[in-house]
Image (cartoon, rainbow, N blue to C red; front, side, top):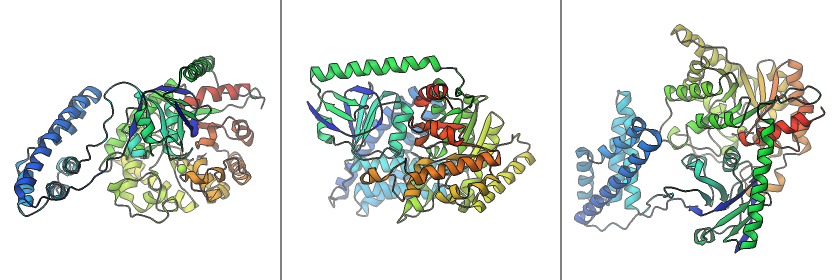
Length: 538
Ligand code: PEP
Ligand code: MG
């Protein structure tokens, strides 16, 4: 048995086989200098790509249906495209290595498609790129990461980017263990959403995880065990059973009103990233969605989602949540959530850079489709919109003006819309200090404590080495939190908390006392928070 520690980000116990996630390493093979040899390498890669895509197509058909699996089928057909194959052959003949010929020819074709007028053909440029990158990866020996095709496992990684986590089969993951990451990183947030015990900053060597037969994680103590002995296993199994019993006991709070003994009604909502999460929110008895992180619709793909794609996602969430309120946060890309296709420049200091509402206000072609999609979907439920990273009143006014413009445009087109309350995500100290001014323009506030902590204390939330300095109980932060709630109450608008601190049982009563009336959190925390609210004397 080998054992070690990590920072626990969700409680519980998980026991099972470990799978180690390693990022693909691409090593460009030394070109042979002989076109015939390079062509033979390319032909072999073509066959491997065909096998991979066929397997992927079959899986996609099973998982998401034939219609959606067509995306993969298109790429399979492209492998036979004679123009592409001729282009590669010519590049190889001209002295290029097979990998470079596959990649560069794919890029040339992708650009030709991207410049076409037809929307369908335009969209195919991403498929060509995807296909040629696959060939490139095969030729560079980066077979890509292969998950076991069935069974549950504990996922161990150096670190996981949001774009990587969204591609994982979440229902089969028993726990996350990362060597890096922080308690407010997105892997930690996902672990809480999925309700699974997880450790970040763990000292588990990847080789140990790779070699062990059974890995166990105790999310209560932050301990991991590789090949635990019988005695340890028995203790862990007992803990696991006790945790399950505690979860069952919380079932008594399902369907109950979240109200304190003194009569304060608190709305307990869920944080979600996709329509799929909304289903989990309903299962967890959430009373609404307090934060939909819409950037998850932008991650793990090669191009911007279209207005229609966004509309479909928002409509689905609105319909799933029914009469319950849903707060959609507009795109909060930048900082730790990067996408390659937006053409954003690399920044020295991304957390203080072009992110959140700043991107939207400088790129209307990115902002307008989001707002149109939200207003179109408003007819199907109770949607609210919220802007991230606001620091000045003018930013809120500019965003509101575009909302009004979009709604008028849709009405002129005969598209039904409803009123969509407009809120500010208070996550910069400037917005917190200006809460009284912002409250005159906003319908609600929701405090993003993850960023508000980082910006108030000037402590990078992603930097594992700063752990003890990232203090969410810091008096400066709590003073700002009290100020925000007071400003909202005086202006007669509601204030909630959607950062991780809103789910902290040590703080929840204090926040209710400050005047917060909504707490939004990982769905798995709803019932235990309801218990706390119902037992509160406030
Ligand atoms: C926050 O900053 O507290 C928040 C909820 O948003 P995110 O974690 O997505 O930045
Ligand atoms: Mg934030």
